[in-house]
Picture 1 (cartoon, rainbow, N blue to C red):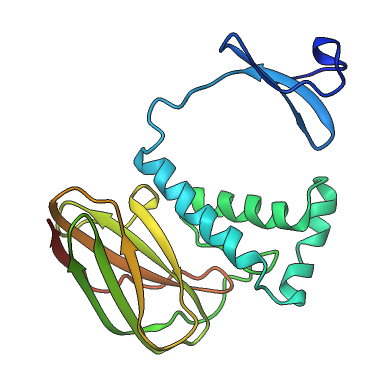
Picture 2: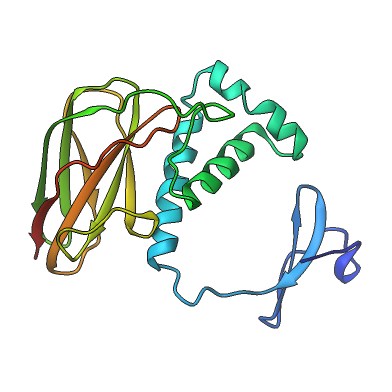
Length: 208
């Protein structure tokens, strides 16, 4: 990516040219870069990244002032907003298969929630996972992993969703769209300060 001044005789040119280069602005700086089209926008790794990014984006607004404030110094050091510092650092953690933390730096403390009841119910083009906790403890969320093979190991590459879970009543996660097949799932709880718990027992059902 190259920074530029006055692209195309304009201070704020944007868009692509001939399907090869893109003009835009980032943090007040104009730049131009090569136009890149993903070869597979729905690869397993991209699905994992999107799932965790969605969770983080939704959770930031609900964080209390104290954990939000811990990101201010990191944000200032990197010329980012606290939200960008929060998502960037936690996505880096996730790339190493470490779950996110509400505060910076990660304390890596707390006790994940304990499983109550979980089930998987297949339908037409989708599957619904229902889960409850008998004890919340310091739980923040449940990472949901999926595979077409029984006995699989949860990993960065097979995450398909993250469910915020800080209460004991049962909650649902709908996995869709899905092609007809039999799917296997494992759920891992994690705390507000980055501790990943043990995987719950595998659940499965068939999508028609």
